[in-house]
Length: 259
Image (cartoon, rainbow, N blue to C red; front, side):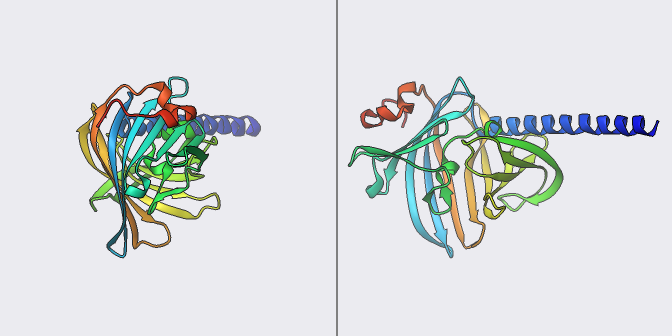
């Protein structure tokens, strides 16, 4: 009898945890839909890096993204506008492959999503990503936090662990609005559990048929004096050709649409 009761209790707990994991994954998917539209689009990204309160670097890029119909993940092409030394360079993300193309040498080389783009911003922070595609989510609980505007929020905390080679980080903690699924805060971790950085998403505006964040504040995990701000502007739905997302096409890339 005791064995049957113990088995029944174990079965109930197993069902509970399976449903909890399913709910966590659905919450993550909904937060992805808030951050990213479902159609192809372009925008301008301005990145400013600060150290000790002073501007240390700036960069401006043109971003094109299109959802891969086979996977649901985004393919992204970045064109560097400034600084002048980088103008014309391209970064392409397609599946688990990430390439940097230099028009001067006409050579494309593989790079890592974790590789720094500018300041605390890595390639993985700028390219468009649906995290539910790359991570398994688990609900930790509801917590009271300060958002990017120092406003107190009650948020669902999820812990994410990478499940494929496309994931830019080993694991993440993400705080999401429990009613509207806006992402408030994310902490990114290395494989050994070290906090790499904390990112606050803010300035939600009505754009691309949804209410989406237009700014991200990235704070270094070791040195809080190192801060990078990513501001996105000039959002626009466009048709992004599949050919643009091929490595072999990079030398021929000439924007026909957008900004």
